[in-house]
Structure formats: C-alpha cells, structure tokens
Length: 238
Image (tube, rainbow, N blue to C red):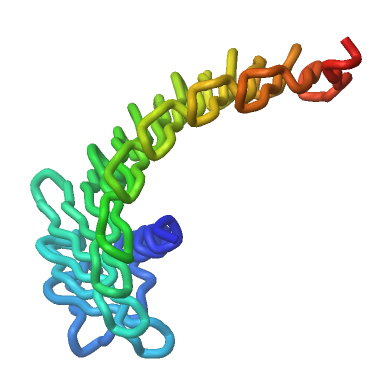
C-alpha cells in the first residue's frame, strides 16, 4: 500500500516539471518567459486540490503540500532551492506518517523510513543513492525486532539476505548476486534445526535440495537441474 501512495506522489512531482497540471488561472502566474512564479494551486478534473506551493523562475521552492481526494494531507515537502534537496513526509489517510526521507533532484536520497498506519510503529528503513537502493533494507516486526535484512547495490539485490523469527533467531539465510539468488540457501525451524537446504545458480534451484522435519530427520531429497525438478527421493527409497 505504501508503494502505491508513493507512486502517486512521484507522479505529482512529475507534473511540477511538465507543467501539465489543471490550474486556477486567478492564482497561478506565468511570466513572459512562460516560467511559473509565486503561489500555485493545482486541481484534478473534478476540481479537487492536488497540490499547492511556491515557484520561483519555474522551480518549486519552500513548502509544497499534496492532498488526497478527500482533502487530507498526503505529503509535505520542504524544498531547499539552493541544494535542490527536499525533506519529504508522506502521510497515511488517517494522518499518521507513512514515510519520511529526502529527495535530491527529484530522486530518493539517503535514508528513508516507513511507518504503520495503525499504530505508527517503524516498518522498514531504506538507503538511497541517486534514486537507487544501496546497502541494507531492514524490515521490522511490530515489536521493533528485525524481521528481514535485504542487501542492495545500485538498486539490485546483492549480498547476504536474512530473515528472522520474532525472537530474533535466524529463519532464512541466502545470497544475491546482481538481483539473482546465488549459492546456498538455508531455512531453519524456530528451534534452530535446518528445515530446507539447497543451492541456487543464477536464480534457479540446482543440485540436491534436502528437507528435514522439526527434529532434524531427513524427510526427502529433490534433485534440480537449472530450476527443473528431475527427481524426488524419499528416505525409504534410498
């Protein structure tokens, strides 16, 4: 849900550049060069306000506010006209903060954090460079414990991926290379025993995959070749 709202917000930002917004001609001013100047409001085809803010020589400056169709605040951006960096807060429809972070030249930059619409607890943190995910995305349980760590490099999953149980014990460990699973994947029961183990090559299961019950007893094997299951072996068949 948060991604849908953020997409809508980014679409509105694009309108600031394109000049395609439906406007109130009594408020919005354009100089002889066609540059927007001063206070502007933009409306949708139903006459509902979409955003409002100030322009200087066709560039947004100061505070911009964006709205849901019911008139509630969707986002607020504080724009630094010198650095072209904006500090942005995006809100759930109930008024709680959904996300907050920076834009630099209209691209996500540095740390972004996301919050629940129910109780405002932290859901995840992300880091961006030039609009691309970089470093580790961390997802959280409502308790604040880490639920998942997803590594990124230049917008692609790259590095060691981990998931956890609510008690912070390891649930899954695997690795990505250039957005594809690569190497050994291990999935664990909460008591620490291995549930599943097997190899990935270029994002596809390959070789022998092993499955165990909660007591650590092998229950079956599966043999894969480049993602295709070729053979299932049960213990009594060995």
